[in-house]
Length: 318
View (cartoon, rainbow, N blue to C red):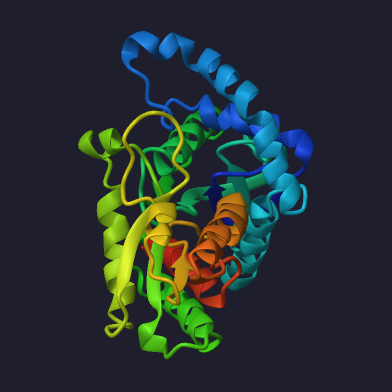
């Protein structure tokens, strides 16, 4: 039996590790009542709706993943982040990963923890900005799991970190590196902060996601006072009104000859939304407009991001 003082669970959204996992991933995602928030009288039909949507979207989704290598890199990146954080924090910590959708999920977490003892649990979501659609789901699933399997061990939840200095500096370094590779004078490049959208109704119900996204952007822009910028939103689906402006519409209205840099501000790790939606779909829109569009890579295994996560864990234990 291995003993640790602290267990850290890095929680992320998840992604299919092969084409065969796309269907299960989508069913988990669209069957989540925090992702698709139905009226109470329709909640019994949540899974039926998920099945219907997945049946219609599956071929297209599989095609998208095929075009970025046949899988999402998110799970592998999250494991690398966990390994780096483990090295950073040392032997008194055990760092595991958990995916809200797909695998590794709760079954895999249970197997990993079977021969491990720990005194405290830290749930650290890889969602810098809190949302009911992501963070809340992580907390609910993991709290229920640990209440059943480790009921007497205290749980610490790290809610969000949209303005943590090292999180901000990690993005600043990424943006500066990309600006240096562009031909236009750095101050003339337009910055597009593209966050994952959510329905406007969720914000009206009290979701603080939009406020925290705006906070992250404002802190980053302190380092780029001479650049113009736009906060926009991507990945909309369904008939409801979502946060606007949409990233693709913003790109469509850029003047020919403009250089723009897309910063995936709500995504810690690269996955289908950054690699395909930004890297392929938005780039094609830009090229048709005579716009040069560059994508800033996700933070992934950035040293500053790992230092940020370590700081958050250590601060939470105080």
